[in-house]
Length: 285
Image (cartoon, rainbow, N blue to C red; front, side, top):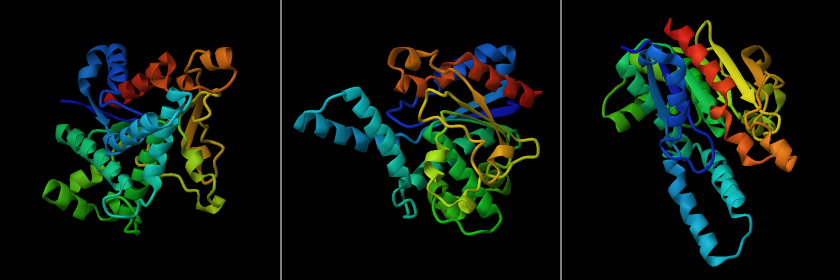
């Protein structure tokens, strides 16, 4: 039986369901025999967005002339994800709500393996904001405070309509990140979503568990990956920022500016992989 759960959340842009396979394979190599004690799961919410984005891209490609196709696709799919998740998120069945539902389903799958096991989340890029919002909403709901959007606005109604049954107390606690012991974020762009808010309204998640640890990796060449400790509201005490050269210097050497390679290479970096493996070893001990 597994002793710890690893839950990944992908970032922006065109993303296949197998997006975490490479990371999980590298972690199994690092963990050796201990890998059998880790229940590895991946959240996949891109399908909610990607069919619509594909249609817009094909219409653009067929009916107009545009340059820099690869970069345009990155912008369309990447920033389209962010806009879609935030736009009208309070309406029932919004993309925001559906994405949170995918996180909950993945957590339920891990809960079925071992209800009380600690969870390590690994989130990339936009997935950091998606996951942070999910945990923030769950923590508000647990306190009986009103939640404006997503499944935690009424988790019982979501369970009834989606699962056809009520959640057990153990499931509800697990879905609310009640056993989350660690979080690793890579290429995190939470600051992009909160920078326009008044300082007093910038509030991070609370520590889900007593010894919770949050490590945030960012590459200085990656304009979509940001440090979190400079943010107000308690981020400095909650998060440990770590600099990593995720692209091996490709952006600075070739372009002397940002390119998508620096944003999409974190999970290939040995420093990041070893940090995740080290946390899994600690949690499985």
